Image: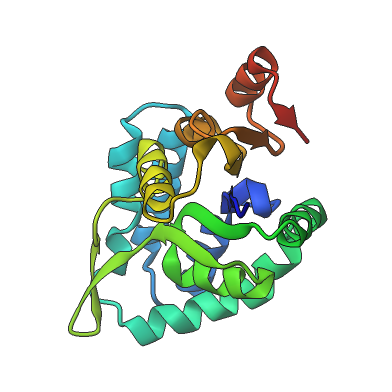
Length: 214
């Protein structure tokens, strides 16, 4: 029977966090100001030090997109993926995807990363679908807000559950690969949770629950 395997992107399918590379290249291309970069760094530190509610931090990260065109972001995404991200795909994840593909599984990226990045990496990996953060567009221009919610933390669980229900996949047979404590809501609902180079909090929980770690 066909089943489904979900993969997080940053620090899971990838050995890096794609965000800093996107910021760096956006600044070089004149799509971000120095102020935008400083704000991104500030928000990143707030997240690392747990000094502000994560949802507020994530929401602030997308504001720089306001006023940018779809063409500008697609061009930037292609440049960043080809220059920095493809080479950072973990060989182990390629092997895992190959394993699931041989078992006739559906392969889906489930990530907080913007769809423009996810779509390109998904095409490179040959996945079936991407569930990511989709930013709102009006008249070919980004508003700086997401269409729905940022695909992060508990929203990943919500999206995973909805996707499985719509396609009649059994949660007990579903897989999810994640690296961060923010992936816990999604990891907790699947029958096959896998932790990839997990952070300290997730590593502790993985040991307690007997989850696979690599």
